[in-house]
Amino acid sequence: MNTSKSLSHEAGAEPLSPTRRMIAVASGKGGVGKSTVTANLAVMLARQGLRVGLVDADLYGPSIPGMLGIPGDRPPAMSPGGKIVPTEAHGVKVISMGMLTGDDKPAILRGPMVTKYLRMFVTQVDWGDLDLLLLDLPPGTGDTQLTLAQSFPLSGAVVVTTPQDVSLKIARRGLRMLEQVNVPILGIVENMSGFTCPCCGEVTHIFHQGGGERIAASLGVPYLGAIPLDPAIVDGGDSGVPLTASAPESPTALAYAKVAAALVADTGAVGGLRAPFDWDIASGRGQPAPAPDAPSGRPLALDYDAAGLTIRWSDHVQRIDPRDLRLACRCAACRDEMSGKRLLDPEKVPLDVVPTRIWSVGNYAFGVAFSDGHQSGIYTFPALREIESPETEDV
Image (tube, rainbow, N blue to C red; front, side, top):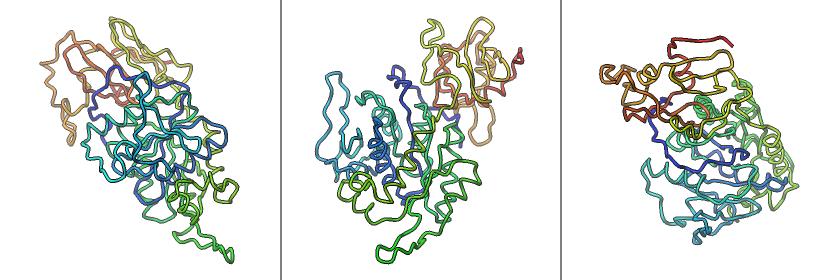
């Protein structure tokens, strides 16, 4: 995946509260019960006393409203400040395309509109004070996943899979995609792990057994727990009353409680500069404050003066000449995406070119606009570290 692919920065977008944690619930493929897991987790987290919001980010196939009993024929209201008022169900604040289009109207959207709606669902909704914002992603590794990873500082992601080998292999791909954009993997949830016969109590592992735990161990990520295959979960989703609301003390609900407790205990902190930020270099507005610490490969501080851009990493201080930074751009206009061959003619780059704005791109990159009008470059942290600098200091 080319994480340097251009994504236009939406100037003036309202930043999120730095205290709000955003956790994506993802899966490599459909049919693993990801939305069911998300809905039940959200209700369980609310029952544990957290202020929880839920974004149904599956714009083409929204299912969260039905699972939470939210009518599809009642569009949300607008606040006096012009924001969307989320609907509340079972203690969870919710926004979904299903609340805007109804049950029978498909969302026919091209990529740019998907990006617009996703950003609107996060920044233009009157969430109030939240402890946690869950994002129910569609399956796969496409526009939605990349848009959210680039636009917002995700605190982490939960990957849902079934014990079936096919599901596990595709879950691995989804997990690797999230790692590439520096989203911390909070853990793996194995859904539909076994069916307990209501008559004799015997457990039948319809989709095999223990696959989620094995893949978590092989990838070095936490295993959050297994959710059994329980007909009551299906009934709850169809009725609009999730199992964690209707039978919170049942064995299946307690399995959700275990996963919820693990998410509450995990801070999901990635360290380094706090995002999002949008730094206008000439005026100094929006320059991120230095971070006290950061893991290897994440910046601690940014500064700019006549010598160029200074990036303080955990192991060294890097100074990059402004023109070298411009020539190192790897966006589709400057580099061939397949071969990596440079398309940008150095002779056409002014000697006095300088960066005019720098903004955060999720947890893994910076976007940079330049005085020559170029503003589509996304510089991943590894790519920045590879730029040859005229001056480097060890820390």
